[in-house]
Amino acid sequence: QKEVEQNSGPLSVPEGAIASLNCTYSDRGSQSFFWYRQYSGKSPELIMSIYSNGDKEDGRFTAQLNKASQYVSLLIRDSQPSDSATYLCAVNVLTDSNYQLIWGAGTKLIIKP
Amino acid sequence: GAVVSQHPSRVICKSGTSVKIECRSLDFQATTMFWYRQFPKKSLMLMATSNEGSKATYEQGVEKDKFLINHASLTLSTLTVTSAHPEDSSFYICSARVPRVYTQYFGPGTRLTVL
Image (tube, rainbow over all chains, first blue to last red; front, side):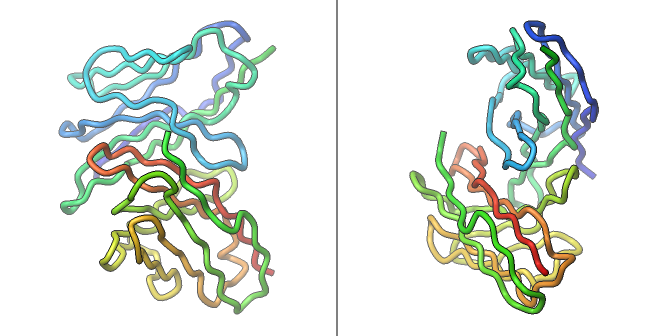
């Protein structure tokens, strides 16, 4: 059973601080990793994708990947109240000769003004 | 990012009727689309994988005769909820996968309420 694990939270972070979201996965063969943001009542929105070990930065967001530890994280710098949402980690796995995303349950992030 | 549309955004229907939901990739061709369902405060649940020109692959526990999927073109997949019942009330979301990149982009979702 291929799994993606996330702490469900809620994770409470003061405005302006760094929010750190973590995700572990079980399939060592996975090559593609994604972070999505989902506001309540809305569909998921892609924030970051990462394919290689190390850091990838996009604005206030940094994704970090460590394939040896099977660990992917998302850092949000200068957190804003508008960042309050559920953050979903997704890992691309090969299942029955078809690629599909395996989803974590999501971490609820609350940014306190 | 790529744009995926979904229609309708909200539908209310009577028990026993059928409802069709359309999912379109607007600026890319998607050979593979996905249909998800999400209940309030719950995780996304993959219902089926829709491949253009072939039959959809349904996840375990999803009734293929109740949730009909048609992926007739590279930009359109439809989900028909047949003989809907109140327990089918949920948030249905489609996604389309960009070929060779494997990134999925989501439509805005359809909120179905069955009375």
